[in-house]
Image 1 (cartoon, helix red, strand yellow):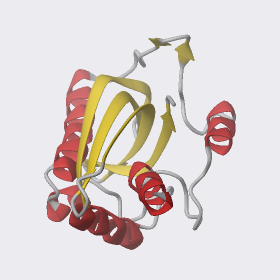
Image 2 (cartoon, helix red, strand yellow):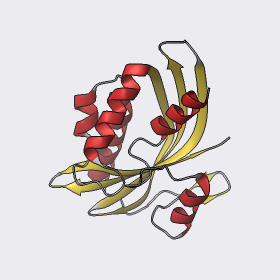
Image 3 (cartoon, one colour):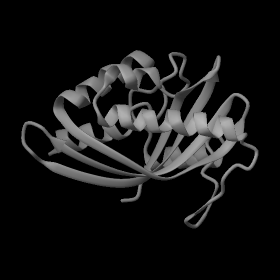
Image 4 (cartoon, one colour):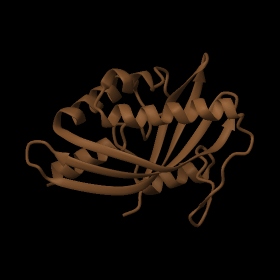
Amino acid sequence: MKKWLIMLMLVLTLAACGNTEEPLNAEQTAEIIEKGTVGFEMLGNEITAAENVPNDEREKIIAVFNEYITAFNEEDIERYSATLSKNATGFDYGKDLVEAQNAFDAYTINRQASDITILKYDDNEAQVYANLEIDMVEDETGTELSSKGRQVTVLVKEGEAWKVTSVFYIGNE
């Protein structure tokens, strides 16, 4: 059971919690958020959308975020890797791809995002908030696990393309 929980944490923090070997716990993530690195702009359950996002950029950013989620759900490592920054600040690109492939090989994972909102925006960075429902099934045993949480995905502009550079996830449990 411990192996299952460890793998769950790895999957939930893929591309999520910095260049450390250990994933950040909820308290560490909350501290980063409080310092302003990531904009969980919330009052209770209310999310405040950035008002300065040009419509064409909003469409591009949301499309990349949706592709990031869809490619992961479809276990398409090439499409998934195309959404990631090779110069990410929140994860090691190569390690993330290895971890993602290991997760694809051992689990069936479905992440559903709702309430997708751009919280912060400037010409080179966007922070996308989403509520996530994550359902996992360990392929070997059929063991099922579900989780709900909040995620901020930070994207940076590389040339004309938006790429995921870091992800912060806080589970609701």
